[in-house]
Image (cartoon, rainbow, N blue to C red; front, side):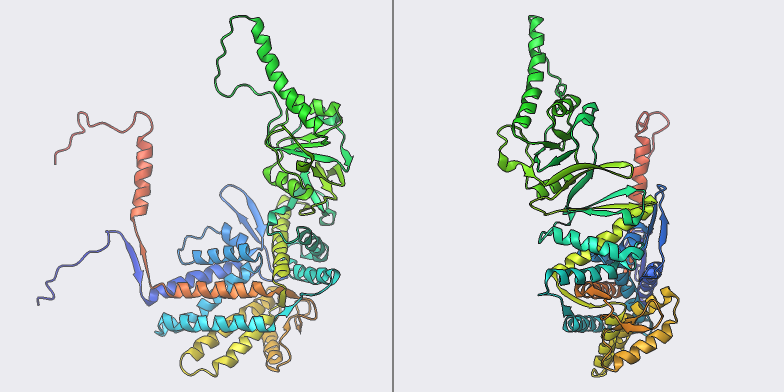
Length: 559
């Protein structure tokens, strides 16, 4: 009786939404599965594209997993984890973003029946982590190194990796053309990690085949004054001066006040301003530079001054382009024109201004430092060129990773089927429930070849049975889905390759995400944040006009 009379203990604020236990874990799994289903159809060479229309009226067409996940405004707290792993996969290796989301979704889907049957989450998590380590070690064992090849062989091998990535993109029809372009661009920047040294410029119009690679720097003609047309537009072996100063007459920024006792003194002040700008321009000319680029404005006076002396100039060059010119030509950006010596000037074999579509481009080629490259993309619609840029970014990242970590594995679902077979075999040696959990992990890995078949319109069950039989025979480790015929083929022999780091990263990230979601058994939604937002909005509204009401007549309250 005394127990019944105990008062109720209230810990959380009124209106707090709590959900816990098995139902909460299952709810989180369902949310993540729904997110994985939204990108499922984009996987592989026959994957479909998504058209996403945002509240600002911008339209994006893409089949890149990371781009779609970013644009889907997901509000479910557990499902947001899948967005994060897609972003991390994109920043780490560049490709495999759809793969990582699909794998995480499938791991959770396979765990769901066990959770519903009362299995503790920690048992699943332990087995999943064990399976993940086994899978990663297996990938390292069967990966093939492309190190030690001559340059031509290495370029051909890297191009195959780029082609595998591009085959699932919108520009897959021209994958051979773009793969070679990407490989040349990555090799041009050498061992540097700064991928921003590869510039991608977009010019609407023309066809994809009109795209070209500049072994140097290319950027759009900047805003220019009238005298610009009188300047030479082509130089052979010019010296290049890079500046971060303004070359124009500027009115005094601070409200300076000058008191004059004699009106004739006014002219001397005006002359002083002109002398300053002319002194700067003279020093630029004396440096011997034939091309002057500045991040800040180059005014009409300076433009005409340089034109009269057969010097090319461009102001308001973006920071990124200026840094790439510096890296390519060996020049140094100067913040002053005093004491400009030859060592700070850049050089290139050829400079020219070239018409590309409706745009004019300044192109620096034959650069001695050669630490940069520019891809000029052509195409019809703006959305198409944007998607082509995202596709090339993925290919560039993949080739970069293949150069750094020179081991590759067979693509087309081959590596997934081989790991699945290996884990099933390993599971038989384990007594207890872990055998079931590792088996479910192995089954989840088959989602990649299954989805490749579904997206291409083939019978997934039939193809997977053939793959299982081939891999079980012991000599079909490199066999994957033949996307052209609906059968199976040796992916490695047919050059469907991907860097092993892509698969390792994807399995690692997907397993970690699945384990994290399985470990959450309670969600508490605090209403304070919502009410705080409401109070902030109310106070903002009250702040308009005459301010908040004062406690005058009729406003008094008695407490």
